Every structure is written in structure tokens, then in C-alpha cells.
Length: 135
Image 1 (cartoon, rainbow, N blue to C red):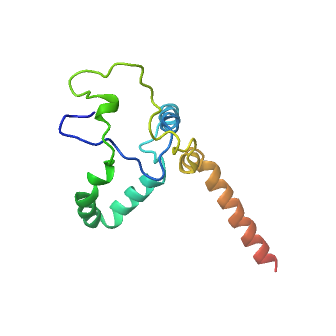
Image 2: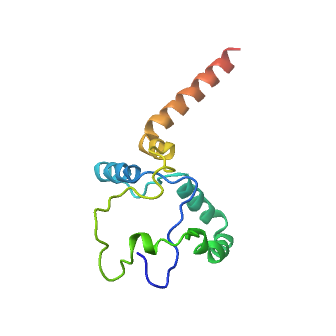
Image 3: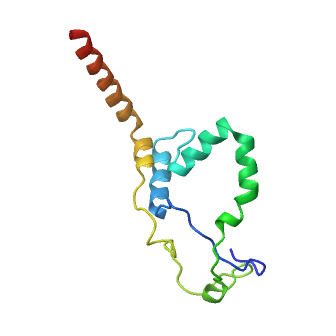
């Protein structure tokens, strides 16, 4: 949403993903209900950091949260203002950040296959223990 008082458009971050990544996560959670699911490395950093140093993160975001999401480019002439009515034209889920966005998320894959990863880690640990014991 671009209000008249916002002169710039949104800015992306380094590890942006395509909208389909989030859609895959939603479908997976709908088919395999669970309390929460982390999608992407920034989510993991945020959740874990908030568990360890919440006050420091709050101060950091209070200083940089708004300005870190704003681009220096004025996008109003390009798309118009959509505060009180939709912008005309065909708008889809892919936009300005499409060329930088990643089509996959290793963190999402690990979250969707966590049982397999735990089983593989257990098998690896058991094999290492067995090989060490046989020495």
C-alpha cells in the first residue's frame, strides 16, 4: 500500500524468496498440521535471536526497522497510489524483486523433511559409535 505520505517504495533484503515458496509452506502446514513452521533463514535468525537477546533486537528494530524496508526510488509515478482504490491493470504476485528472489528455500525443505533428517542424523551417529566401538 502506498499512501500519499510515503514517497518511496519497498526495498527487498538479500534472501528474498519467490511467493511460491511461502505457498508450499502453507499447503504443507494445511496437510500436516503443526503449531509453527519456520520458512527461511531470516525467520530462524529472528526467532532464535528473540529467544536469546530480545531487548537488544527490539532496540535495533526500533532504529532500523522502517528505514531498512524503504527504497530510495520514488515508485508513485510508476504505479500510482492505492490507498483508497485499487491500481488499474493486471498485477500478479511477481514484481520488482523477481530477478533477485530465490525459487527454493533449503530451510523450508529441512522443515518439511525434519523426520527424515533426524533419522539420518541418528543413523549417522549410531554408525559412528559402532565404528568407534569396534576399534
